[in-house]
Image 1 (cartoon, helix red, strand yellow):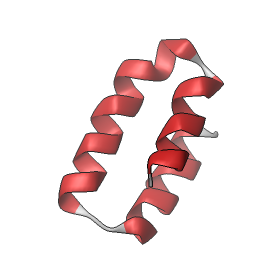
Image 2 (image 1 turned 180 degrees about the vertical axis):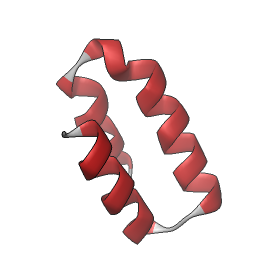
Image 3 (image 1 turned 60 degrees about the horizontal axis):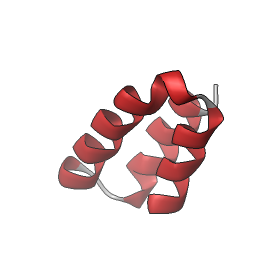
Image 4 (image 1 turned 30 degrees about the horizontal axis):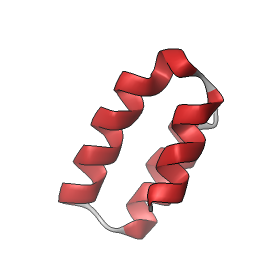
Length: 45
């Protein structure tokens, strides 16, 4: 899960805050499948 988070953060530094919030939300509320769905669709868009 952390790997996907790092990919999103490293893609663009301006997205760092959003990436942290998104990662924290998904980590606490959902599982890996949700991380893949939201992480890739949003951060790697």
